[in-house]
Image 1: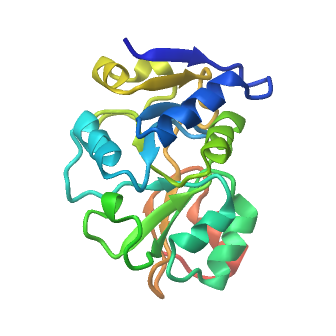
Image 2: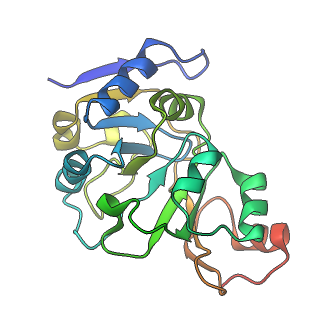
Length: 214
């Protein structure tokens, strides 16, 4: 049976965070809370663990997995280039509900890239999710803890039983505050595009950086 550890979001993270980080570093797969929705996550560099995420979600092999980071400096190892305006957006919205798609460095994030030359990266904003990422010290391949095409879960009760049973550890921190997937913004080419709407709106992005976004 999968261990489910409860974490009070109003208190400093404790043993549950350490346990999750140890599972991740040992090659396991965990469910953790973020500011947006619950995520299923594993060490980005562990091919077997990343493959488990695909299998548990019934996710198509040609659909890349986003990457969660605990510290902005980790982006240096993932992105081939970071446009100056994208760095401005990170100043505004990271940690937070904004995922940015960059051209990825050659040879990195291969397990989650689905053959694409890009990588989608986010630094989540909740205390619990951030604490796990910082404790693990690793970029994590991740996706919402649902079956592919299903509703992204705000709480543990909304996560399919097959996913709960298939991971190694679950952190239950109550209801995720945002309750919707992050805004997905592609900054990998001169024309920026919002690929998924979220709490960070197109108007807010345009106001922040002073450029038109499709």
